[in-house]
Length: 258
Ligand SMILES: [Zn+2]
Image (cartoon, rainbow, N blue to C red; front, side, top):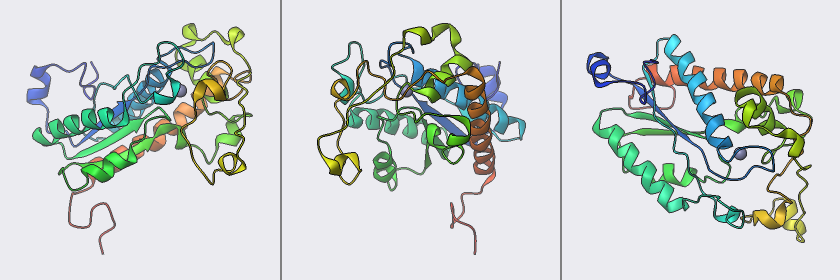
């Protein structure tokens, strides 16, 4: 039993454990990932990152609690692919709100949303809850945590099911990766320069953007690259959890005191 994993804890243990200081809520998705990665990819990945980060924070003495991951995310733009399972942004926000409410009821006043799915738009949920809950909320999109060193690990840009995600699969759930079946993950540019250059944003209709739902070439993926990324990201997030758990919720939180 990992004493920081709620799904493994029993009431006997909870009853005798000193209060938890920070909760981590992982968010995944259920959606296609090119022809070679499983529908659970985002959830499997965020689970590994969350587990490693919480384990590290626990070793550092932080009273951290890992909540079970939400395995569904926003898929409105993926629905032309079979079996993509959608939660609208407002539905997901309601689920998060109720869980944050539960944390508040149990006196856990620090919570990190650990997101593993690019389609989950969550910053607005923090804004909306800012005055509505005593819980201090943080958002971490784990796949952005190592963007400063991304190019030293990977050759190709990854948007969805490319080299990075495939490397994570090879490192953590290799039996579910069929790399020989993958296509090259080519994507179509928009007809609008303003969209291609990011001056104007859209929700991309994924079946028109991609050939088989992949965006990014997965063929240079290796398990070693996935492990390197995991170690770095987990240590960065783990250290943050550790600092957060110890940080008093005083008047200047989350800023430095004067
Ligand atoms: Zn993914």
